[in-house]
Image 1 (cartoon, rainbow, N blue to C red):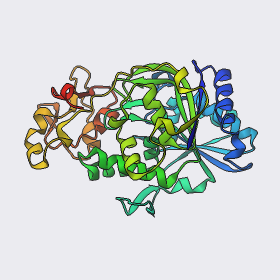
Image 2 (image 1 turned 120 degrees about the vertical axis):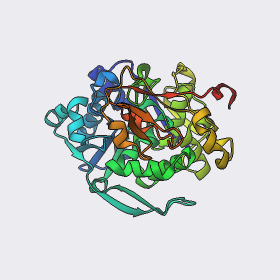
Image 3 (image 1 turned 90 degrees about the vertical axis):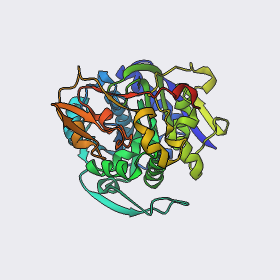
Length: 375
């Protein structure tokens, strides 16, 4: 039975956050249960982009600070790392509010620069090898610090999905291209990455999440909680419940269940701190996910995809023609026509990298007209 600790925390007031972090870990027996003194600990944050903390794009710096303080009491050497969509972890940290933590708390921000191929020992694995940042093996422990956000491809980006950041830069685009339109296939890769890296703890920043056009351009949505667990699948399941999200539509939970990884039933979770029944269920504005991709044969789907399937849509009033979407599109489905960005939806693999990374928020996920009639 997996254990999930939940503590209420309504604001990013540092004193309140510090107290909540200590409490959420104490509920699980204390940091001594998971990490030895004098260890090197990597905090795998969610650092998608160099955006101000008020935008709720990344793990909030006050949550990271609270975790660092707890580890410092345990005499640990602490490092912050991720592989942002663009640029380096250090570069993005300047805008995300992480740089001042180095001097203030004697920790270090690291970049994920190098890849190493590892054999995948997972049972029933669909990938014989995985390619991850070699830097993650320089540390004794990894603590996973995801942010609660909507996500155009996977529905929500939480603990399991956050470990995708352990794959460096352009390697992420290669995985998107390999998965193609099959979201279940991509989700299984995410689960296998998580299973192989297996952070010792997942501490989820759910004080204020992001709804709508996530994971970068959505709107802040208060949840007022911090969660902790050794099982990211279980904590992701709890978050899905809190934001009123059908777990059958969360691809990573489906993939984890199919592979027998983690806990996939609320009744099989032992709660500490707040009980799930004492928390308000929040309606998140979700990213449209319904599609014909899994409903009709592939030889028919190709000709109908542009008409019916969920797809990225450009707001030309916001688009500044920076061409970043063209550069990062794994399928090369985006071109220029008449000095405007043009999307070839028949070639689009629905990874929504363009929507995720557009620096102007000019791309959103457009719902197909059949979505309301599909389970």
